[in-house]
Amino acid sequence: MSRGIWKSTWLMGLPSLSNSGAAQLKFNFRPFRRSSSSAPSRVSSMATSDASSSSSSSDSPSASSVIDFLTLCHRLKTTKRAGWVKRDVENPESIADHMYRMGLMALIAADIPGVNRDKCVKMAIVHDIAEAIVGDITPSDGIPKLEKSRMEREALEHMCKLLGGGPRAKEMADLWMEYEENTSLEAKVVKDFDKVEMILQALEYEKDQGKDLEEFFESTAGKFQTDVGKAWALEIASRRKSR
Image (cartoon, rainbow, N blue to C red; front, side, top):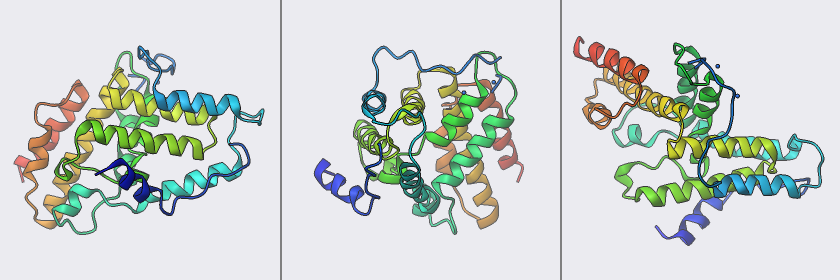
């Protein structure tokens, strides 16, 4: 898909930008701090630039920017997860459904030394946020990984601008980039939650709808990075085997 075609597709129908101006899985929790990436991300730099150029002295985005941003995020509630749609699952979950249960996972998981619970919760509800614009891109779509990442970064830049820049947009961008680049313990935990949530959902669809969704379990085999992810995945596999 060419960049021009993609941009014209996702930009259609987006809310216009307003003119009004533009974190303890106590897992022994260290304070929330940004990733120690060797170079600042383009998205994060954009959010910082917007913050410094804003005519408002407040750290909070304007009401108009907030409602524009939240209106766009509504798409996360209405866009169904593509993997389930392609397997003809009835009434499949939305992107927001998936992120919400990941947030609960981060909230209830046992303490992990060196991991910040609050940061994990935030990262869980941000990690797929660019899909409000690009949709849920799956491997079967044939889009290379680097191109998918570029598309999502560009979408996130738009969302940060829609929010008016500033510290909230920068935090969102930093969390997304940290997850995308897998550069922290929190990112590794949340990436495992992403896989755990998917296979738990697959098990539920198998039980409720008589589906065979083996491919989703195979796609995550051997890819868990943390003890909590491995333990929860093993429990799901055990329940599936005993059905």
